Amino acid sequence: MIASNEEETQKIANKLAKDINNTNATICLNGDLGSGKTTFSRYLIRSLLSNSINDDIPSPTFTLLQIYEDQKKSIYHYDFYRLNKIDELIELNYSESVENNICIIEWANKFKKALPSNRIEINFEIKPNNKRSITFALLGLYNKKNYLWMQE
Image 1: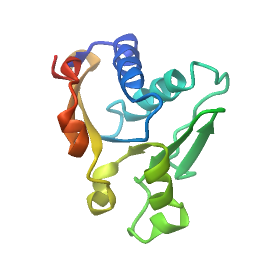
Image 2: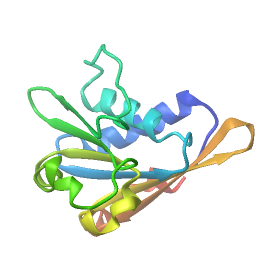
Image 3: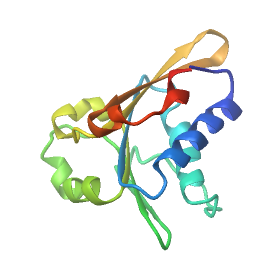
């Protein structure tokens, strides 16, 4: 699907949030620098937490991990961009967080072997006129669910 502006990106993130709310899910975001991964993540996190976050949602590029919580769920927002070795994920408590929470991982393809088999992969591609192509791949158990809107 094509997002022509941030509002359309927000609508796509909101649809995904409705589908994964109240579940444990791993969302893997890939694409070039500036392709929309962090913008999409911000909208997804806000929607999952019912827009209860008033503060800015920073990119976890330098912190590597940002955690957001409410009474019902925890959201782990990772950025693998600056990581060099898969062993660095241990320090971030990655394997435990990916099993029991919603995890959003930017630059997920950097450590493909560490990704769970059940995940939603989203690829962002910059198109002319500041548009973004957003494509979804449903892996594992997600492949059996009916997310027709992702195929638009």
